[in-house]
Amino acid sequence: MSAAGQDANIGTTPVRAGYAFDEQALANWMEANIAGFFGPISIEQFKGGQSNPTYKIRSSSGTYVLRRKPPGQLLKGAHAIEREAKVLQALGDAGFPVARVHGLCTDDSVIGTWFYVMAMVEGRIFWDATIPEVSASERPLYFDAMNATIAQLHGIDPVAIGLGDYGRPGNYFARQIARWSQQYLDDTDAGRDPNMDRLVDWLPANIPIDEGDESSVVHGDFRIDNMIFHPTEPRVLAVLDWELSTLGHPVADFAYHAMMYHMPSHIVAGLAGADLEALNIPSEADYVAAYCRRTGRESIPGYRFALAFNFFRLAAIFHGIKGRAIRGTASSAQAHERAAAFPELAALAVAQIPKG
Image (cartoon, rainbow, N blue to C red; front, side, top):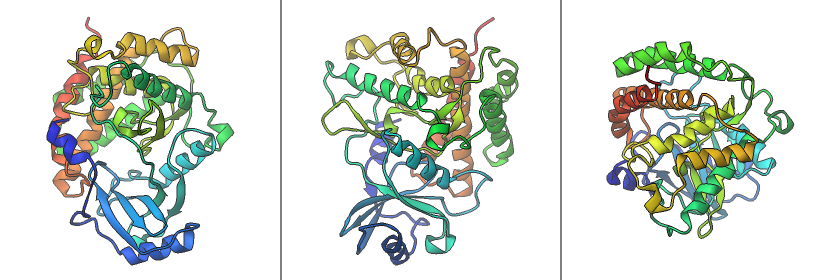
């Protein structure tokens, strides 16, 4: 992401045109549904967030965060904020670092769309994967904290925490490839791309036969800029943005996270082109090995396929952002910047396909 794009993602802004709602109606709902809440309230909109608009609510009883479905016509099954609330509540009860959910509203009449309210977690978000804000000696500790956090997530038994029905176990790659291929093909407003067309054909024909039936809760967007770190320590306080979470293959989820090693920083937080040794950042091989140690694996067969799949999936998401920008329903000021990056992501996905 460009420097301007990073700046535009940080902090809050007055609620943007088209995203305002009845603030008194929200305050009335919070008073009736959130223990200890009392107004009055003031509302700002977070600059970041591509899909579900996110707001900072200041009140006499504290600060809260609201996530809602965007206004306007939505693709079927998209923006399921009730799923976000469910996974946050279950993982929080299991001791995983997430923000506490205070309440979910599935009544459109309150503010116009479904929403949930959660705690505001104070800490640091790093928008640059090289973490220039910390010393070189500390950087490995921050990468280790991320590695430990995703390994912790994949070690949680979904059934034991009430998420056994959070998705369909097994055949994760096949189902995801079909889903994102269809979403890409259906969004005719955003157009077609030859690399995406190639991937739509290549990916389902090349799923590693040893994928296995492993299943865990997967985040789906596990990146450094989707985590809140402790203000001064290399510790993850909360993982954010669970809208793509489901039950799935942990290797797919980890490969998405490790995709940072191949990701140009102008698209999303990535390390491509960075001098890892000079920055004292673990190599990709060492980072993969650390995850394997934590999860009891000897190696990750099909890792390159998983990288290709994840670049494809992210390209499909950016293609969707492009479509929403064209239709005027994109919820972030950076929607056009991300739409422009769509072809580059599709090319990066094809670049992961083994030669020969």
